[in-house]
Amino acid sequence: MATVSIVEQHSLWDTLSTFVEQNDGEVMSGPRFGSMRVECLHGSNLLTQLAAAGYAASLLGSVSRISPRGMTLVDTIEVALP
Image (cartoon, rainbow, N blue to C red; front, side, top):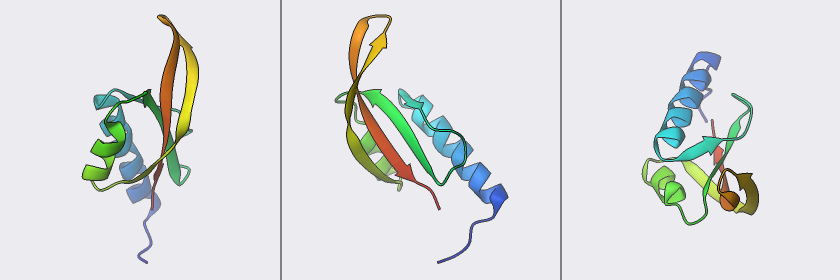
């Protein structure tokens, strides 16, 4: 397995973070920790979009969050980073 430099890891994190935000997701984990946890509205196609873009993503489950609209069901996804 090839080693990824710190600079490459930061670039991958930034790219993935932008992708998630552009596809109506929200990054929930701290920056650059080897994996990224994101949340999106339950039933969103973000998991499919991540997989189609080549990311190793898995659905961890669904949780309720308080939002301006009241209680909202969101899916939690974990994306592995090199």
